[in-house]
Length: 505
Ligand code: FRU
Image 1 (cartoon, helix red, strand yellow):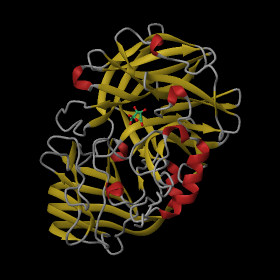
Image 2 (cartoon, rainbow, N blue to C red):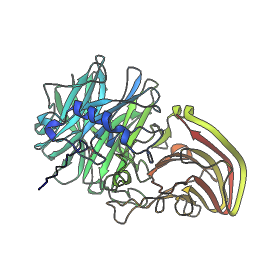
Image 3 (cartoon, protein in one colour):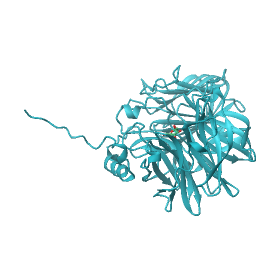
Image 4 (cartoon, protein in one colour):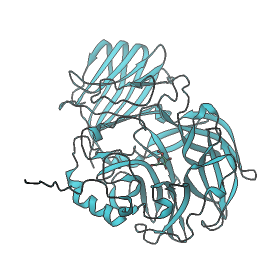
């Protein structure tokens, strides 16, 4: 009798005790060329292979932007987290760097979860959540060169004993560290015994010894069963808190994804350590936008980036064995307008735009049409339309006979809708009812609507009226030719200007 032995190839994740940085880097080097290119993005930050989620440690350090991210290099699904790492001089071209942190300690053996970065004495410090069977704790690692990190011997620097009595130690994570005056502060989140989210504030003189200060903000039942990835900063004389809420309750057109990113604008009382909230809003109205993190750079720009996916969904690139899942949004500059955040693509993206064509004052009356050379899978479409006598204006993107993604504006309800029902590979999710289309009410300015649409191989980011609203959505067309961009008007739409550019790095 012959016995055949099948030798397992190294493509499966090693046992947890083997999860070292060296092993991860070796695996990446050996396997990254096998990743399928079909849906890979052309101008967004992403990992060379494997799964990514949250942006972490986003910082401007020694003249470069560093971006770390939640990372499982070994397969295209979430598993024991590492920190991947990339850097950039312009937030557009990203250079891949070695894995920065691996789950190689008792306190982070179940994953190096999300966290942030700060510079102190010329060194790069990161603060992250160690996930372990006893709960979640906060830890510090330090780097002299911004690439190789050492976890400090004092870890964990925050554990269950630092929690207020209403918190659950199993859900205590995502430290975002910052400096104010002479002190360091960190905001983290925890789940309360009532199954709601809350933001906790700690302070420290040295980043190692921390003291509980206050519960900065407590969530209501409607605001989700747990909060994640808090980020607190000052912007144009207001205090801004952005966080991600698990299962935020739907309200009108808002918060329809299973999890949502919320912006809180208001004022923090630093003596009390409490935030007085003046306004609340969903930060992005597309399907795929979560776990934001922001930085302040040398030009004093507040720039935010998000994971361009959503929990609870099916991930087409994993299902189709593409070897990767997940990417980041375009970095976006934040400002305040009328009490709410606006998001605009970082100015540097302009250097990657190659002008293709431009049209002015084209009137569409109850008709559809294409514009010569306005077509593509990767590019930027910039248009201003006058809708005074329009009923409905619609753009079909990545279209062909069978598939299309529809962006439409209904001039009666004043709602802008992004519909990916027939975009390509169907994406199912944890939402009930399912979220194939998302919409947002957008008021016009002088009967006009301006849209800046960034297309990448499997994503769309739509900036409306100068960034007053954004809609971010992933799509996975299955047909080879899905380049067509089709315009349609019911009633009369005047396309005042339309520019189309390629995006080439
Ligand atoms: C948010 C999150 C974080 C956690 C990380 C784990 O997407 O759930 O709260 O630190 O992802 O990968």
